[in-house]
Image (tube, rainbow, N blue to C red; front, side):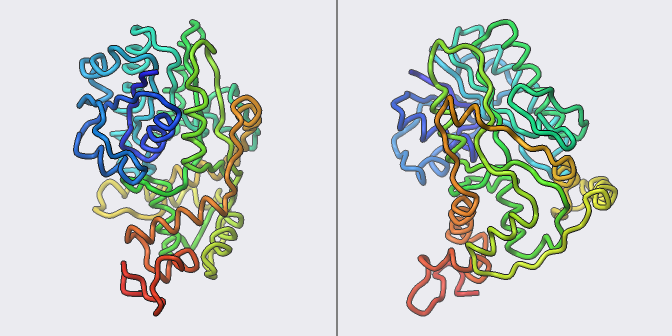
Length: 353
């Protein structure tokens, strides 16, 4: 099957390209910059030249050219950044891009058309959600953009379009080409920049499990479907406990009621656009934790057959990759850096800092 992938040089997209190619599919990419293809895909074992079209998902003309001749589409392109400075790009990209790509895929007769949504689109206070639960009514930029994008995808499903909605949680894992939001936050946790963590919790997944779901649902003739990617409900004690286990570090932190952190981080979000560096106090991150939305991912486990990696395994690989690529020091990576250090215990990447 010839599959168009948007966002194929990103974290989820690049792993999905690799999974699709392993499954025997022929992949075409829609990319904004061709020079990003090799750095994103070569670490995943893809070294051959890739068929690609240069263009943006918000521009109908290159999208139409990219979709032409394809049997299926995986729409993974989106702005995923909880930094308040990204709010405008989030609003201007996520919903318009989804509308343009899905419309073009439907017009081309593609089957299936996989839309990468997010569990944040299902965010509801203190609720366990399924893939079919009502969409969130929260109005913060990223959550609202993903809910609106999924609402559009659902409206096409209602008309019978063969759209598959896949809903991953916060994504960890190795080989992140551009250090996406969740992995940047993990790096900052290891660097001690998150001494406080809000109460609550959220759904997290491994990028390789997301890619496995995308490859598994790439089957013609199955009609509209929705899947939450299998993962782990995680809160501060769970996350820091797992990181302590895989790094051997103390990693002290203070749990703070999210209701107290919300007004503080909201104020920070108003200041952040005028500050040239990232302030580690993202309002939407606290808001997601505050809602404590749990996810029932049993449909993907039973119908697609994807069993998630443990949080510890995912974090171990994530931290090791962060160290290997110079994002954290050997001290910050702890035990995960053991196989990357020499006889002296000094890291070739950072001099054993």
